[in-house]
Length: 81
Image: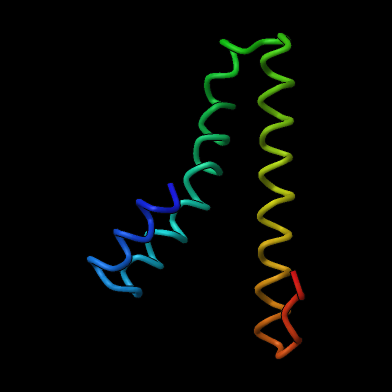
């Protein structure tokens, strides 16, 4: 995935690549919202709770990503790792 992303960025340029990259954060949100419209399929099964756990994990990752980006935007020193 990283190699594909790197190759794509070198071919189409950073600005278009970045817009595509940002759109990948929206797609899981749309998929999650769509899944509620077909909630009859999942019902009260373990799959429903697994799906909700995946969504929660994605939400946490996005929140950390945003907090990290905002920290760099405010001029804070980057993490040493």
